[in-house]
Image 1 (cartoon, rainbow, N blue to C red):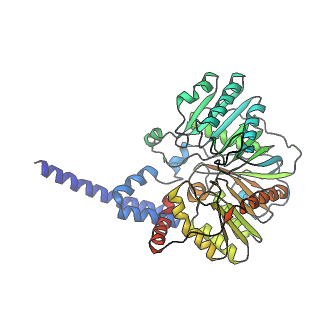
Image 2 (image 1 turned 180 degrees about the vertical axis):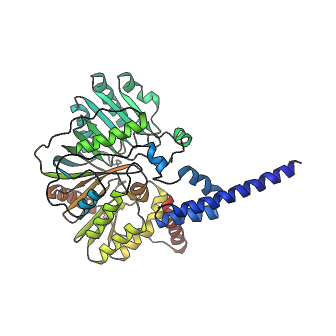
Image 3 (image 1 turned 120 degrees about the horizontal axis):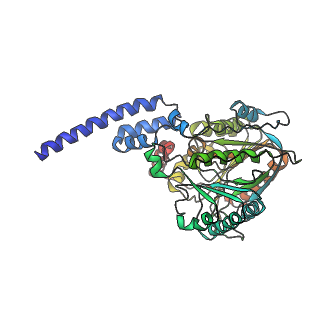
Length: 461
């Protein structure tokens, strides 16, 4: 009897699994996903259905209408007029209804290892009304505890402190670490806790990768650095990762404040009053804040980077810790190199994630084969994210040059059209060149087969 019931149960499970696989195959084909992503899911559903089907049910589409209703689309338009004649990238972003480029900002680039700490603590200390921080990783190490103590002190002085943490990236942060901040009157929100996301059928892999620190809706520190000893500190540490951040003051700071306001509302349900927009401060720096993620209807950031690569005439320099682009991006970089553009890609020699390291190698060899310069940064982990196009555009912020950042996670980037800051970023990148090698590791037939397989599966990473 038991064997009969077991056999019936097994047969029913196989039939149900087969039907689900057929339904998901049809559903996946109808989704407007990149072809490589669609192919990767199809292969996974066909060959490992008992693994792929549950994963697809949990992950699902990245911008489905039902999930879009769970988080209000960002609406971050500003009334300040754009200065100057817009270039092709700026016109494209305007067509995507991104917040327009605005002048009257003061921007300061800095190496996040020590200057980033000073910028962040200065942002906390100078706040008079509000301190809003959202970050992917907030570690309760020496630096994290120092920042928490500073936030608790300011909250005790009457400043409204709100701290928004990604539930996965900051999973080491527990209630005990946050007790003093809460007791002083500060508020803490968690972005998409895993259990709640599963219960509400939200994708648990769509993480808030934004790093935004806002004081009084007027002063911003942003970039790629999280809050931990790996990224920030008051003193130089040879083990600290190389990262890039920037301070921003002026009308563009209000866009970052708006991103935080809507992210906070999504995570906590609390509405934050909208502050009066910051006035131009006399500087001619023209910047454009570009958010991306499930709360942005289209892929404006991705489209802008693709356009910038095709528009490049002299140089296209890319600094990124993780390089797993899709075929369209790598083709744009390849064609830029073939037409004589100085294409340089700077990545860490030893990244901290093995799978992405494996997946990137075929892309690195492909670029090198067409004449692009591929540079492996040697001294330590390189976590900076930057793109430099001719002398017309610099892009800095939180997105990596990979599919997850550009098409899945919540991100924010700053497009800078000011020649002075573009030249400053070029000088910073040139300093990295001296500590790089352009020799890629050799790989035998077996290793190349593994790497090619990782490339096929890279859309799922």
